[in-house]
Image (cartoon, rainbow, N blue to C red):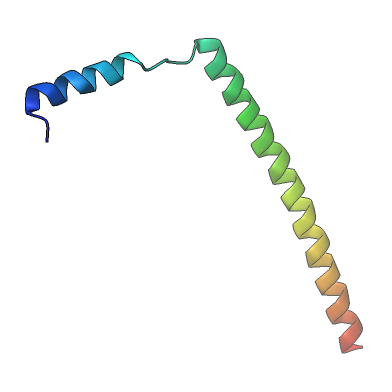
Length: 64
């Protein structure tokens, strides 16, 4: 177990290794996430619509 001073020094050394993304990288990845979220929401909505119509028609045919 390291003493508190060594621990703080190790934390500072590790924190110095952190590489923060640039503003351009953050904006680019944010836009990509938003576009993909919108795309997946459309795809899942269409899948839901197809499943709902299939079940509705299947039940309608069974009840006739």
